[in-house]
Amino acid sequence: MTKVSVDRELCYGSGECVYRVPSVFTMEGGFGAVRAGREDSGDEPEVREAAELCPSQAIVLGTQPA
Image (cartoon, helix red, strand yellow):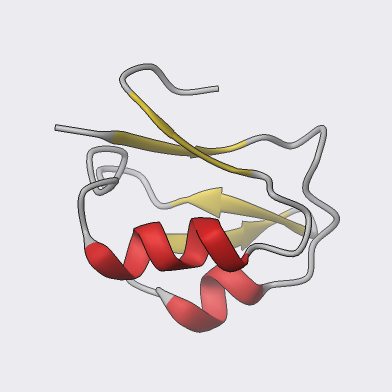
């Protein structure tokens, strides 16, 4: 199981993650965030694609959240 998180130090609020996977990502305070309860969604192909295409490279996939 792969965790997904958003590094708020890198995120500049483009909203690409929310556009691509609204079931996993949301906007909080103008920045991307992972919806509560969806932190273990890092193995989903759509989430991996969102991480690859994030313009600020703020989506973190791994065993521990950022």
